[in-house]
Amino acid sequence: MSEQTAKKELPACPVETTLTLIGDKWKVLILRDLLTGTKRFGELKKSIGSVSQKVLTAQLRDMESNGLINRKVFPEVPPHVEYSLTELGWSLKPILDAMRTWGEEYKAKNA
Image (tube, rainbow, N blue to C red):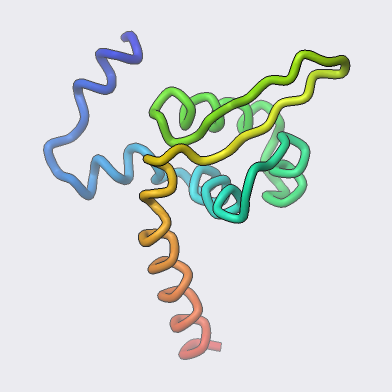
C-alpha cells in the first residue's frame, strides 16, 4: 500500500486519527523534544534513551511523510541532518501540553 493510499484511509474517528499519527510512545517523545527547537539525530536518540537507531529512523521517516516534521540534510561529511517541527507538528503543542499537565497532576496525586 502506498503512502498516499494510507493517508486517504484514515479512521473516521478523529481521536483514532490522532492516535494513528502520534500514538506511538517514541513519536510523542520526539515531538516533546522538538518543541524545544531543532535537533540532530544523535540529540534525539540521546534524549529519548532506550529507542534503537532503526526504530528512531523509522519513526522520524513516518512523521516526515505525515507532514509533522521537517528533515534538513546538510551536504557535508559526515552527514549532518536536522529535524524540526512543521506548522502541522507545532499544532500538536496544546495536546502535548495537556498530556504533560495531566501527567504532573497524576504523579502528584499518586506519588
